[in-house]
Image (tube, rainbow, N blue to C red; front, side, top):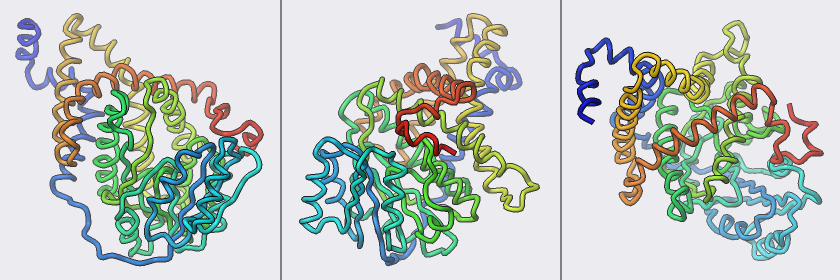
Amino acid sequence: MTTSLNFLASLDFHSALLLFWCVILFDIPHYFVSTMVLAFMPPDRLPSRRYSTSAVIAGHNESAAWRRCVESLQDIDQVIVVDDGSTDGSVAVIEELLSEGLIQEAIFLPIRSSKIEASNSGLKRATGEIVFIIDADTILDGQAVPNALKYFSDPTIGAVACNLEPANALATLTTRVQAIEYALAITAGKQMSDALGILANISGAFGAFRREALESVGYLDMEVAEDAALSMKLRRAGWKFRFAPDAIGRTIVPETMLGLMLQRVRWDSSLITIYWRKFCGMLSPFRGDFRLSNALTIIDVLWFNAVLPLATPIYIVWLYLRIGEFTWTVLLAIAITLAAMELIILLMVGVPGRLLPYIPLYSVIQNLVMRPVRILAIVAEMVFMISRHDDYIPYHQRCKLS
């Protein structure tokens, strides 16, 4: 320990910059900007607005979740539930909700056709000026809807990203780690992206859309990451996004490490499928629809979420070749520095104190588990296009993958 501390103390400014180049290029900018936004750019205080509203909830085998989700919807004029060929008794639950007047319309697809197909079926029946797309396992806070609606006072806003928190945050160690991750990546991260005008994704778990905007781009594409694809289509069409930190929805997150890893393989493969293969043309200044904000959005996503993971093993090997046994000293110093910055951000967004002791576990899992999973997902997508074989899209619908 003394030798390691002596090694760090012996570094001059330029040597430190050279050794810590990876974290300086990738990690620190995001954490620093997030901290500055949280400290000096509080959320807008906008007056309440009233619009006609619709909510579309699509799901497969969600019999245990439909009622909780529907009962959490307040101030929604038209609630449309779409059952995607369920076999678990969902039909009876939905028919009961319909008879109680809690939903205005129910659509039953005869076989599982994908969340995309189910959602589009509901979206085409929506009549509200603002349409909420909500996962069946998401429960909304009482003021979530009005807190999202106020951002639509600007007619150029096509969609509003709502805030998400794990509903089962305390269920397991895995969910506690995700609660920290959601606070950093969504509550803080999307406030930063909102402030910079580079908000990339309106989550399919809980997002608000101007119906005119959805109609203008032809609703959802058949994609494994359908929410990311829709978001980029809207940006390309010229619509702007906002983030509503006080529009809170609580969604069920994986409770096991295996479940989390499988979920993230699907999410991480979309970094290549959506932001590179499908929308890389938005980087070209020679396109008629080029917008600098859209180009910066894609660069931000790919730089911090794809290039960083791929650079990490290169950085570790480079460190070892340069400083040998002190590699672990540098990596530990990086981990402690980032954990300190994460603690500051978590305190600023008001994360419950009972979650703060899990920050070290979060750092370990992110660096030793989730980052390798992301690397594998990115490489597998680049080489094998694994998203085209994901069971998230039923086999008979994969011919529609764009």
